[in-house]
Image 1 (cartoon, rainbow, N blue to C red):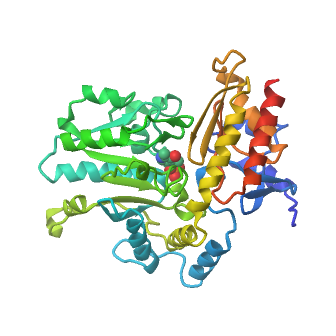
Image 2: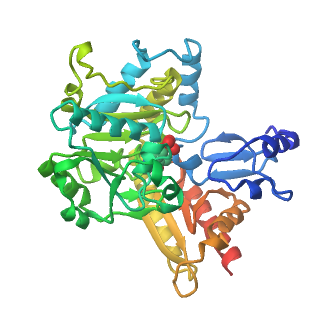
Image 3: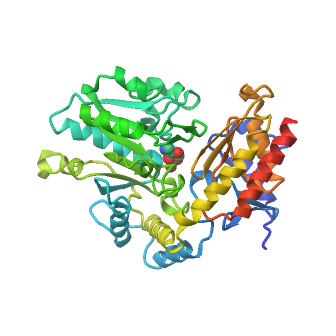
Length: 430
Ligand SMILES: *Cc1c(COP(=O)(O)O)cnc(C)c1O
């Protein structure tokens, strides 16, 4: 395999780049060598020194069928030979039209029948927020402006999406410039909410990802749906992380057979290849925007790259692979295997709690007496660095080790990942 001589690139990165969610003083420190990833194949990534790592967090929760999948690669190359991008403002393109039909067909039992494209998860949430506000504004209920979300929620980093967020570390500093949101602890708090002014309730269904893989109680989605119906508010499901098989079904909401008025998808939509977001909504919402041009009921919203042809090509290929490789059926025994391996790790005295939802796992480290660790010790980060020596690449959320493998991995690769985590915990916590 090709090994790239990249010393100079590391120098350039440290001199010129500012990385997301990264303390750049540590990054640019003299002794720190950033991991430079140069290629991938299947569930594996390779760095500039030729070392290989299992992609333990699916490249920040995006990758589904592995890297350099022949079908997605071919779809992209074929689209490149036609055109890379054309505007979606006032025009359409073949793949965006076909993809919309296929996305709607993924949820046949739901009322979700229309697809609005955007660039990523954050903008997909912005679309849902703005559609909800404008819908009520122009359909006789302008008082419905209140949004309800949950403590520890994460819906993206743009200002609107982060207004809904409930992770203090990320969001609190910007509260002065965000719109006010009613943030609940859980479903029980809904009783205290006056629904008359609520535009929408927004939730990550089944599991809060960035909160550290926190699980919601079973049956919660049905109760939320009921509350929203009783009070005339919209329900928004943020399936940016949970979509595309991660929980064992195509979408998390399918576990409870409960459907929202807006469903936002992004990360896995293109199989982890390209940024693309989609906000699905219902026929009644769509109709609430119809009128003559001068009535100004149009949804005046869009991005330069909306409906991008390459993104849509990757997304269509992604969906086709789900059918051809029977990805979800093949995933079932892998989830069982993962469950067994996680159960074995629960006995470790350095593990405080293990939380799992389908193929998503969060392993929370703890002190010897089961108490939480001091996050300033960065134990989770140190365990993840140690795991690299055993062939696993992942990123923690504070002291929660995230394991979210691409759905294409084998049982042996699950074993490798779990072995690596076990050994890394032993090395760091001993
Ligand atoms: C990642 C994530 C987002 C934001 O998506 P981006 O593509 O990073 O903007 C929103 N909601 C959830 C649940 C996510 O996990």
